[in-house]
Image 1 (cartoon, helix red, strand yellow):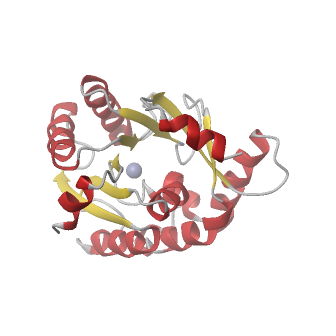
Image 2 (cartoon, protein in one colour):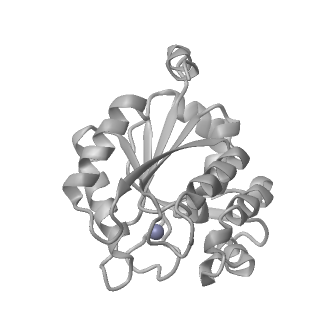
Length: 229
Ligand SMILES: [Zn+2]
């Protein structure tokens, strides 16, 4: 565990994802997180709830599934026990601030704020609270694509995940307890990844889409952009 503080000394970048439920992180972002991990980022996934109300019959199953997914995409998980469908923005702010204090993330990724009639109530509360914290602490923030109903989501950043699409599929496959959900089906995952490619006018490949809510960069950002073409 001392590697975290050690790696900070070498300037390692950290991404912190904050999602309401385990599996929310892999559907929209497993490919991107895997690429970040391969590029040397420290990938931390914070899950607000422990899954006791999920379709999983055994409490703790989702923890094991998340850990298995984390091994594939190079992420480590941190679970909290906020009550599903009943937590407040204040509770999320507290948890997020604690975790931010611990990991000093360079980037936060969370749910897209969506009107409740389209999104899950927990996603909306999480998105609003995390946006509040990221703004106050001046941390870059990306919103990830909602699993269904894209209303309210305006993607402006697309990541080519073609090289890691198999890892994404495998990471999602770790969540066996959730595999009955329509948007967890393999064809749905691939179709959405291809949909984003079409959005970019690309005939081939798989992509993940994000909406950059706020982004702070240093001068090396432009070198990275130049090297990516
Ligand atoms: Zn969720």
